[in-house]
Length: 275
Ligand code: C2E
Ligand code: CA
Ligand code: CA
Ligand code: CA
Image (cartoon, rainbow, N blue to C red; front, side, top):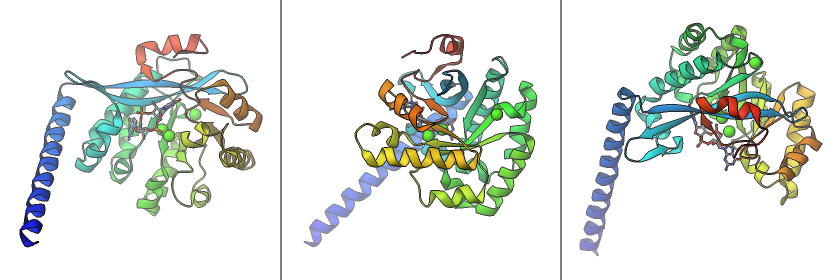
């Protein structure tokens, strides 16, 4: 049994080593990719449900890897957060998004995702200000998307930062609503401009009565608190129709378009559907 235990332990160690090594490789790759400008920002339209007009685009980061092709953020953002590289990556996204949005019609906003790690950086306000100034973009056209975990991590400091951003005119959205803990208390701690209802509720809209009830409750909450509600991951007309009936303000999803590179923004503005 002892030999067995040692064997298992050694095997476990080797496994850890392999993982740690894979991590180190990915980290080196990430750093090099930043130097080589392999990151690009894609955009997905967000439409007003009542008018069908595009009101914003969400900026979504992509790694255009020379061998592996386009890599989705789930595969590199966690490590970028652990290593702190997310600060540089986040600044790249902010600058790109503001510069791109400055070329769009001025009634269209740009939404940028912020990592909790970016919130711990004392430079956040300065980098947002710089990105807006460099691009010549009005602050009211920028929306920053944060998740509940940001508020959970460093409450007081985060609230101060959020209030400063708000005072600049930047919009603040609560992303992935419904997936974290005690969501409602966050709506009391900070006056968000927008709630983004997580995709998981939308995808089960037609099949689960409880998802329908949750969507109804959140859109109602938004209405009474004066907060815009955006449904994520809308993939079909049936979902859009139910959302319209519930008075959800905005919708985003593959039904309208997948995220596409900046050069396709005009195309996404033209047609109501683009898959
Ligand atoms: P998120 O902020 O919730 O972004 C929405 C995700 O849902 C995107 O995945 C988008 O492509 C996907 N999506 C949109 N419509 C549909 C649909 O109809 N069906 C389905 N199945 N999916 C849909 P993506 O681009 O892979 O991004 C994943 C997550 O990575 C984002 O989730 C966000 O948390 C993070 N992320 C992306 N870009 C950035 C960034 O620049 N900075 C930071 N910190 N995080 C980012
Ligand atoms: Ca988001
Ligand atoms: Ca705005
Ligand atoms: Ca989301």
